[in-house]
Length: 618
Image (tube, rainbow, N blue to C red; front, top):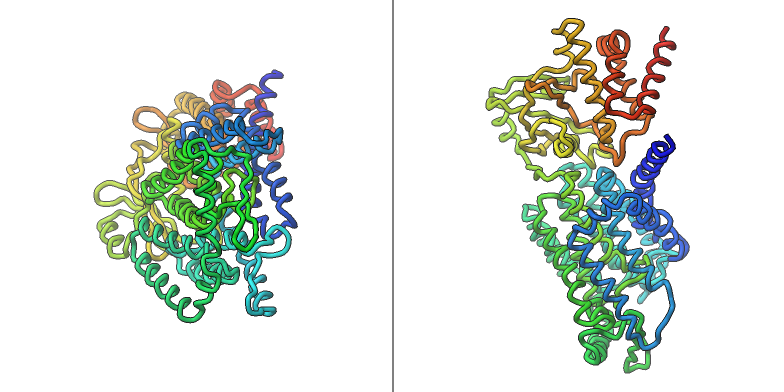
């Protein structure tokens, strides 16, 4: 009994961390530099709300670590980190600084946390990113207004007070979120979202220009080229045209933005860095080595202003190999999986980071700060998406844009199964397939981030991977009026409600007992089907149970907690006929079947709940 309570408690802790703490941690990681007082606050936020919870969860469930280590990016990062730590053996000044060991661990936890979050709570990823982008937008707009009011020639805008205290470092974040709004403009099919995201993109680009930094302009150019290459749609042509016109306008109206600071000693710095690299080209000078570059004017800098040169200096060609592999694999994965929009976003952010890293940076492993937005965050997102895709928690079927005439042709001679005031909802097509249509909702609801058609298809894939029969998904569609649809092969059989109506009392008892087993299997596998009732459970021709109408479903990391199991039962009690069969006439058979799969404690809670409701009703 004590062991079962311990397991139940550990499951609740795991679920709480992955479903609530990690999303909050990711949101604050992406946005807190805009409002915290200094970077040390960001460090504590990441440690407490992301790194430590992730480490705890990987220790609780080693299979999650095994899933992470199957990813080439995670393995390459481990090789890179191990070599960097090994290079401490030939450090010119041996140090016992434990922070050098915590940095790679903290970064690796970023990979692991994104993998856990995107597998178990991927429906929150888009709202989290959108929320962080809105925070960045509001702060940037306020800073722009203040900058314009007090502008004097030669001024460069800083992202705000406190953590963002450098124009170039601030430009990394402005460019990062410029890429996000550009992605929204390129992928959204909803006019209201486009009307919001286009001005947001303009504000973030204005913030980039106000910093006076040219590095993000180079990076954004590479990002635009990459995004048009992977998207290859009509908007790509408009994007290229807009980039050319914008560059021409900038050179004609404000050429000093590009030319007034020359090369900023970049070529001189790179030349000196290459000379130092040539001293130890293969193994580098060591992870904790100091780099001092003295310019002709006497100024001394401590980084080569190039990530690639920094890697070569600190860990040499041997360390450079896994580092460049990570960048190449991330871009390759984004190109290969471009049918999934989130891969387009992640690879575009990586392309931006690569572009920015050509003329900026130098440290190879750092604590959380602006440089994380250039490489580690995009790489961690790509890793998380790959894990979610492999574990079938991310939709693998590409979403097709369906023109009105194509939709009319598809629905020709279709039989309407279900309809509402707005039109048909479920149709049986002429070839026997079913088409389920989801009407658009308000643009700011969760359905705008994760359309119900995609939820339906993704849930079907996940349930089938768990061995639970569901309709076979054939296609997912996006319609011009912001509606969406999914086509599928229906499961053969009757709804459980129809089957129970046709049986006598003894056969009905046996079927309800089997349904109790099936419901317990769902709960033990973490399946919370909020709309579970006898009309959404199918008794198939082979005698097995299947689920239909599964858009309103979530799969939890652990067996469901007792409160969710009871909520499932309360929903079924809303239907008079279901209530009479399951909870009044044949409840003992339902409980017997449930107890054959679920734990005695869970069964006892179910029994108490039903009896309490019965006494309340009486």
